[in-house]
Image 1 (cartoon, rainbow, N blue to C red):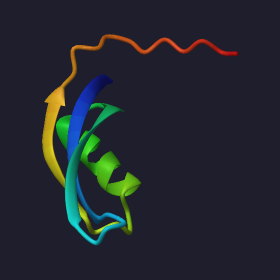
Image 2 (tube, rainbow, N blue to C red):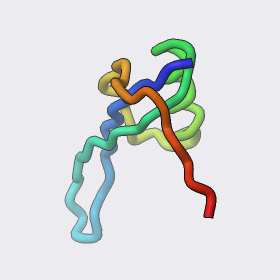
Image 3 (cartoon, rainbow, N blue to C red):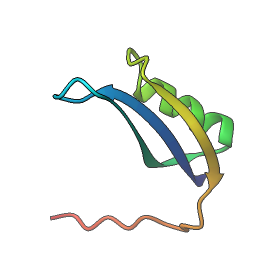
Length: 68
């Protein structure tokens, strides 16, 4: 498996009624770019105000978790 950086553009209406667009970056562990994109679509299931802008291989080699 590899790590993929997925850029997701979100569109929402803020508390002033103005439509706002932001781009969020997600790190996804998957075998391919297609699988990483599918993981994002599953994560945002039910939310229609997003688009996947970019999927790119990440230079991150390993994520090390420290259990507390």
